[in-house]
Length: 338
Length: 198
Ligand code: HEM
Ligand code: SF4
Ligand code: SF4
Image (tube, rainbow over all chains, first blue to last red):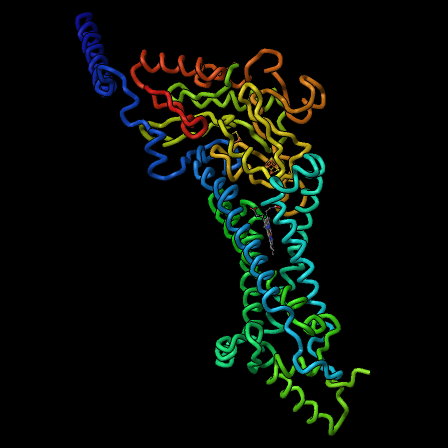
């Protein structure tokens, strides 16, 4: 009996040892002579070269923080500090210089046949309201936006850190909130004037004949001539691009990462600079560039001779409509000025 | 003059997040904001590395360059600080920062951001050193008391090092020589335009 127990004990012990050895062997096999965790360790250089950004896993809710490194910020910095300022400077100062030269050369485009004293309605009250709402918003958006780009080098040294910060905070609020009426204005402009702004063959002729502003020619045009159609599409497309990229910026990281935010600022600011340059040209023609143009958006009426010279086909349409309806009721679309 | 830097020896970091907690506590960092965080790369795979990251206090700091209201300043110790009184919360510093350091408390409607908050190297802000106003806005000013940032001071594995750049680089170099490997000083090339040869 005793011998059996002893044998059993030996057997069990041997079995247990065998188990241990079997279980232990993979552990031993995994241990090389020298530990080198570097063997398949991630390397910063390599990760940056592969992806330009290093991401991992974090333990806090803010998923943006899982991006460990994004050296692309350096390129964005260069864009914002150097490239954008060149683009903006050249676009805005360039167009201003061109306008000055053009004005000195051409002067104000006069109504060649003089004022007739009779006027015709060009834009009704609603159209003028939409135009001026959008224009006011645009000017404030442009100034508050340019403040972000150029304020620090140009304005800050003049008024000091505190005043500049206070002004910039207001400018930021203005920029954020006026974006809504501006966007509404762009949508209304799009709907209101799309009818007269589809490019056609008359515009080609209009452009080839210098549009009546370069030479002294008066190519025919309907309600909107080729140049005005261009402004229309710049406002509609540029306004949409500015609005879409702007709303990406206003709602940061709603479905975007830092990379798309950087791209949104780049799109937004480049569009803005070109947009401002184009609008300077628009403002020029609407004011000192052309006699009789401002009234169209001011009082809403233009002189008949102005209409004859710049929108001959539109005037014919309006007059035909007026005489057509004059038989039944007097429609005062062409009224004496007294 | 010392040039203060951070160095995270990723081969030592055990992702315990004590630095994150220490920072939040020492500086009374507002809810929802983490000035320091630990990011694990290749999580669960061979060669996994954890790196503790906060503001690196860059040389020629990108945040400072892009801030439209010029609210950053670099101290004589090379620490990049900012003024919350001047900040307008535009978010540009976050776009430029290679390390995702700037944070914004969410205030008000849509994405409107409050005053930017980031790691101060436990060196407060423009207010008088150690004043109550400074503490309320920026947290502790340990540097003025001759102490280093708490995250690095209490790192249990001494993975996270803070101090004069040359000294911590030397410590790291010796470690690499002794143990025979090192995955490098993460972020140094981007932040300081230099690497520690290992
Ligand atoms: C229509 C909707 C628009 C929205 C939602 C919008 C939004 C924004 C936002 C959020 C920023 C970032 C800066 C900040 O937070 O202050 C910004 C910058 C800027 N915006 Fe707008 N914006 C809009 C329209 C415009 C327009 C029409 C212009 C130009 C006339 C413009 C010109 C600029 C400029 C120049 C910057 C500075 C870019 C830079 O320096 O990086 N924005 N905009
Ligand atoms: S890590 Fe970011 S916030 Fe800190 S100094 Fe560098 S760019 Fe600025
Ligand atoms: S968020 Fe504040 S600190 Fe950052 S760039 Fe804008 S104003 Fe400067």
